[in-house]
Length: 304
Image 1: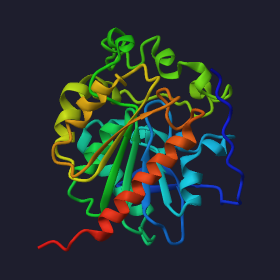
Image 2: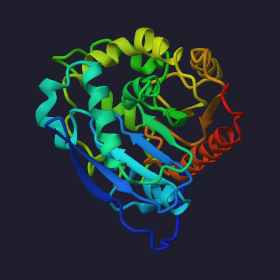
Image 3: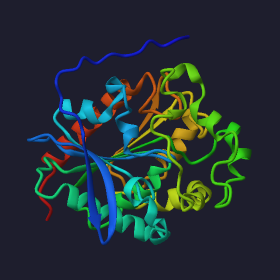
Image 4: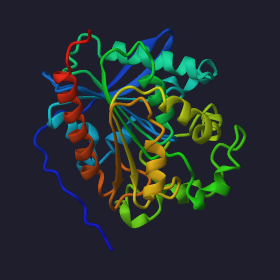
């Protein structure tokens, strides 16, 4: 089966702005698409070996979460995670999870300073970005979070990935064969997007430990502390993580304190949910969930 390219006509939405902010001497770069009266603000964190441009792939506006969400009335902030973009030269100061969470908190607050937030912040992440996103979602400093979307991650590796990813270490953060796992099946991506050449960057060594600790330690511990609505998405052609119904259910069961958990198996989708032919379908599903979170936040009874 060959999927045709989805087309979203250009309606004159302004280009996302490239911005940089200093946080305690460390620069953080990001893409920002501002809505003057936003429904909410989406903070989108990319996965490994890329940047915030993952959510606005060059030359493919029809795939862009940033542009679609802006058109539908949301402000979108897509930071380059710690160790990527402008902060890459400062990786030695970002070795601990606490340092990375602090950096991202400072960046989000500075980049959104003075901007309306609508109903609040909605966090979204892909793949390796999920670790930082969950730490942000459980940080008491974020007082206006309305929901969370995770994609491209999981609780148990796909059989195709298990042996390969066991060899990941700080000295071998990206073993040969990882690219094949991430970018197959190739027919699910536009030919010039395949393997993400336009947005590919080296990943920092600090991420290798996170890959090893994530499924059995960090993910279960952090998920159990999340107290906002959660949507979890996995592509039906995912080859890094299990994507069968039992695998989804195992992830959903981790969020014991969340008021609502939605499990989504995205049709016609491989690992990179935001740059394949079904990116627009996936993003519309995310934004539908954001709308539900907005209603929940706006209609919640007063505390006390």
